[in-house]
Image 1 (cartoon, rainbow, N blue to C red):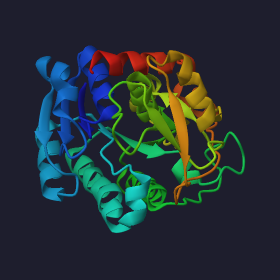
Image 2: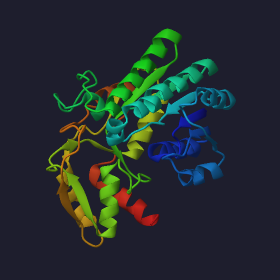
Image 3: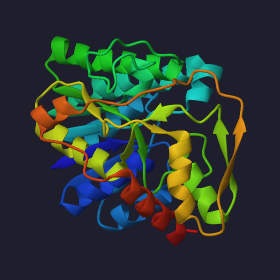
Image 4: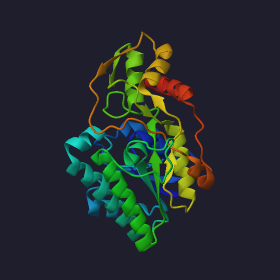
Length: 311
């Protein structure tokens, strides 16, 4: 299969690229390397994958890349994912997540792409969980521009399906974690905590730490993308474990795995973040044959091992 992965040098994207290359697919990566890392693709590039440096906000560049690559499937993971940045600069967030998605959709339509798999978000779209775990028909009430832009991007995927017959699907991820997530970044509490655990540092918990998230291992997210590409189901599909884990519970789970001691301190809670969320994945199980395989304890060990290996 010929596949194009936008944001393929990033955390989730590069793990997906590795899986595609491993099964023998012809893979093109489109990434502007603003947050993605070329090093994440070293193995894939050595095995024949192609990296094209381009920005999804540049419609002409996107169209040219897609026309040359002639992908059968596009996995769209390029995005602005930082909730705090979206609050500080919602226009930038919109240009990347909405306009950028429209550019990739238009290029896909023009090139006759067979399937378009869009990476979306569960918690940020639903807002505060009224029904837990939240099903896909849960009311959408984003509390930050990031969630609003992702909801708009989903809307355009549905529009291109209705208007142009482009086969699209949106996957609503929980809190994804695993190897290659940046332990020094703003997004990804598991990676940040793991980095502190390896260094014997002190993690920061914003608020009281009782807020809950649905943590899902990146390998399970990759599997959901591959299954979604093989289906024509429109979704949207939740991709999570359906379990609530507090930030305090996450810290406590890491403590016995830490090398030189691991502690945490509290800081004021941050604007735009929801209190409680977990995702009901029963639709993905029924229609895609997907369900999570990696429990949190195992995923944390895999993440720590990967960070330790690359220190």
